[in-house]
Image (cartoon, rainbow, N blue to C red; front, side):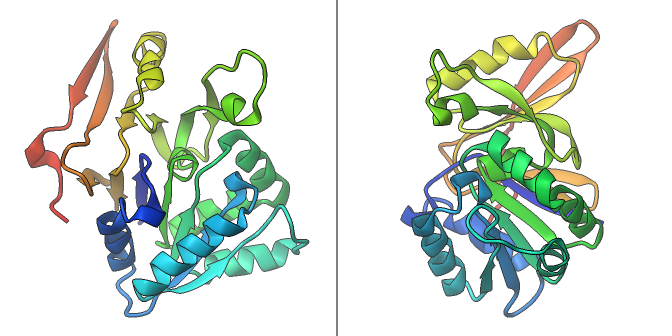
Length: 236
């Protein structure tokens, strides 16, 4: 039960995540899967929507869009479109804003239901953080507030870990120090790398072999950081 592909970042429009996108489509097991793109975190940005449509249509998907910030849509219709999808792809942007909108429309509840129905759940950046217990989030930077800071934003909790994306960025390295205060295990994903959960088993994939993933494991009073080794990645 359950399939999740959580991508650490990358430019989908430039083909940086293409091999991962192909992998996501393959998990559906269908020749022409129905893919639902949820662009809430980007405030339903039209350019982003067109990019995802183009990429996934070229990969053989029937692409549908769930816009929650610019359209009025009934809750029953939201549940229906989510649960009739073969794949759900969540876009990047402001994670905290996205989670608030999702709660308003019960999208959080329906996505958990989709997981139980074995619908493929996937996404990049904010669309990666959302599946975890909490994400190390840059919403304050996106909102342009004074003296912004990274902070934890509560996710759906389907995966019982903490998650940090875009980990190749220097400013994200403060995550290591913050993790010393946390009791929950975590992962950190550089762009073009993805964490995959399938039926309770975990592994990693990547579209760029120069990028890496990391695990942070709490062992008593000690926090240990591991880089994922070459042989631990599934070849895609």
